[in-house]
View (cartoon, rainbow, N blue to C red):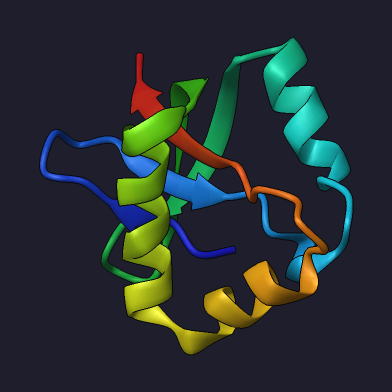
Length: 96
């Protein structure tokens, strides 16, 4: 899964599910339990565990976040085309 670090220290993730017509199961879990724990690379080949709060982005904020994914990889635009009209959610993970 691609996480895009933001200037404020948060991380954006996209619930793309490879362009499937439905959201991935983990997205439903995050919506039900937005306070969670993730693993992130520590920059030295290891992994850190971080407590975060998940926020589903809406409107222009979601669109700006999604643009970051499509700018990173053409594959995300392909997922969007395959998704059958599903708006792929973008989630901000903010450290707690």
